[in-house]
Length: 87
Image 1 (spheres, rainbow, N blue to C red):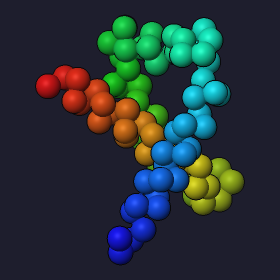
Image 2 (cartoon, helix red, strand yellow):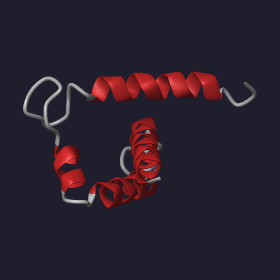
Image 3 (cartoon, rainbow, N blue to C red):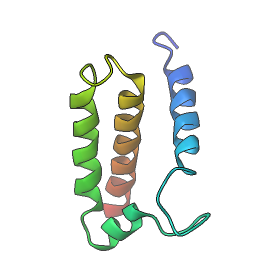
Image 4 (cartoon, rainbow, N blue to C red):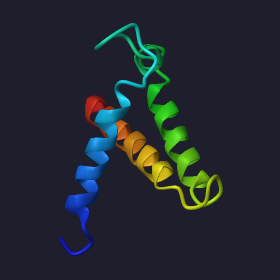
């Protein structure tokens, strides 16, 4: 691909997989904070706000921090999931 989208998507997938051990949860495969927010019907707004937060932070905290872009992209993927569930 011209703009390395395939490599970037793999990097993003690897990043997302690595985060699952870091989430606050009740154990392996357990209930996460995002599950609670979804139950309260504020999960979509939470993901939207966090995507914006990380995009705004990019270039400010620690320079052009690639991790901020990966985090923003992860929240956009979660939003895509919410969008699919709503249809």
